[in-house]
Amino acid sequence: MSVNVIFKIAAVGILVSVISQVLKHSGREEHAFLTSLAGLLLVLFWIIPYIYELFETIKRLFSL
Image 1 (cartoon, rainbow, N blue to C red):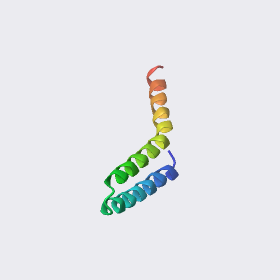
Image 2: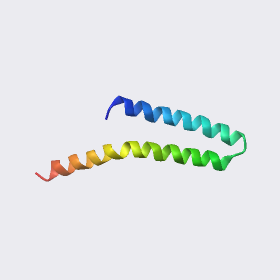
Image 3: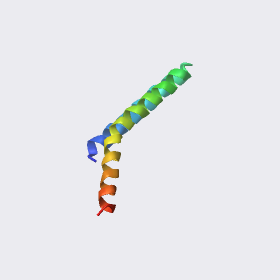
Image 4: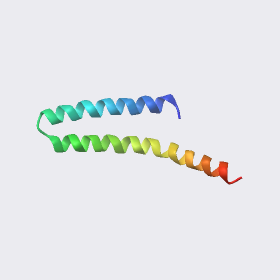
């Protein structure tokens, strides 16, 4: 996993939290929830290939 992915995840987390707080204070809790959900899904789509690679490596390690 490269450092760029970690920085991307951190940037998305900061942006989502700021946008969510602004939406909550303006009375749009539903939009704040959807923004948080969209950020979570975006990060999960970035992480899924690394999780797949981890499981493949574990499978190769134990299948000698």
